[in-house]
Length: 499
Image 1 (cartoon, helix red, strand yellow):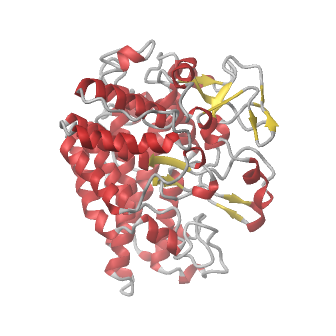
Image 2 (image 1 turned 90 degrees about the vertical axis):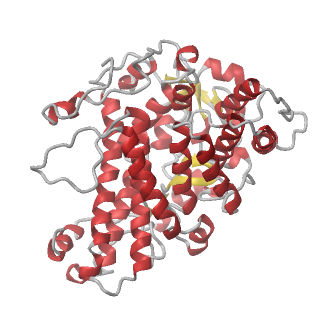
Image 3 (image 1 turned 180 degrees about the horizontal axis):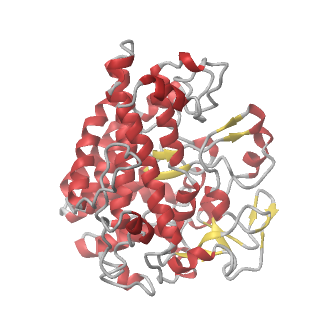
């Protein structure tokens, strides 16, 4: 543990995006500056908050914003690279399933999560040393800080295992002369983060409490439970996954009251649908701007007039054809000639003039706070949504033969999607386990289209070879460990099979 004087010097250089008029109560809005504290008077809790702010912001780095649409969605049957053939050429290998260990976008994604982990490890170290430097910090406050860092870190490790399998599990910041540790078996990574998450839940706040206090952006109890549910789902431990999903559902902290076509609006940020949400803010007139990269929406936004972005991660013809009669279609697909907010959208000349509608910000949002731009640099990233949890519960229930429970939860999601159209999406009554499994899989596909689940759903279901053109079995179930990372480790890191 570094001494307090060194830490103080380090934190003086931080841009602690995400703090408000009162640093603790309004986090993560605003900035730390000399008018708040003199450098030599920085309270110890600000050091912890600083690393937490960096961890939160690193979750939406450019490396993540560019890499996640590729590895999670463009690699699937439901999305194309989008845009022009030459633009974002680094994504072409993902679309064509020709990537190898030199693929820059794969390395970006890998590094994005380890950057998050680094900040979390620093915050955890500061928490563990808090008693040496600030006796006024209560155990309750320190444990809350630590629980946030452990939950963010656990989610980062879950995503790394999801994409790469065995990965180095690092619990402290590595010094310059320390060697890269070898890959840790994914089962051990899971065991480690399961322990961390279970410890964290009691020390985290509920979503409702965070919203009421104005502490928007922090992970909640259900954020941790959701990562636990996903870990057990990927291990096909249906009973335990279902148990954590049930805890989320019965907590009353989330529900499906948000209209589907408004989930991604500013009005419903950290609303009932929010389980794990990355805070991105841009309010010029209020001098509010969170740290981290703000290009999530513009990387995928409509390319043409109005010019909302680059046009990446466009819905494929297969998805559009299969989903055309679903009420969620127009909240998912934004096409050339569509009219939104009285504006006729005119696509640039691209192979696929169809775009991800989930990153479009309504015109009234574009005009608020002196933004006056359509690039949605304020659009939060909904990493895990409540409907995902409800469908996970339905899937687990069906696998366990609890058909009534599966059907009830499936109907919850379809009822919300149905909206006011009583003739749309008739209630499913299928009781054959195999047929119901297929229907649940299809529901996840439509509900979560162009988000974060499709590629890894197909992998865990064993359906990737059947559903994804050009998919290479016994290889592309995992992405390669980036070759530059292997080289930098002097061979300590090993490669996944087939690369």
